[in-house]
Length: 52
Image 1 (cartoon, rainbow, N blue to C red):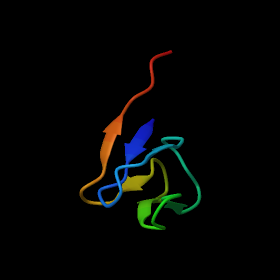
Image 2 (image 1 turned 180 degrees about the vertical axis):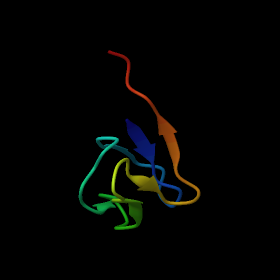
Image 3 (image 1 turned 90 degrees about the horizontal axis):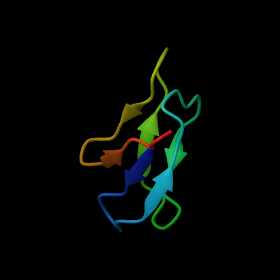
Image 4 (image 1 turned 30 degrees about the horizontal axis):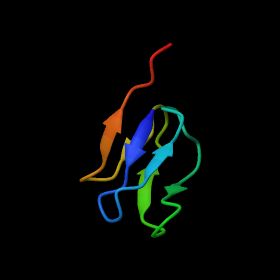
């Protein structure tokens, strides 16, 4: 899925079941945090599912 950073609006592609903390490339904001299953998105992040 694509995530849009709420600070600098850069788009980052991540896996829905990410096992590590994902940081924004532009401003180092935390975009998502791992849980037991799917990653938890940071409040304010916009997302878009990829088409198969």
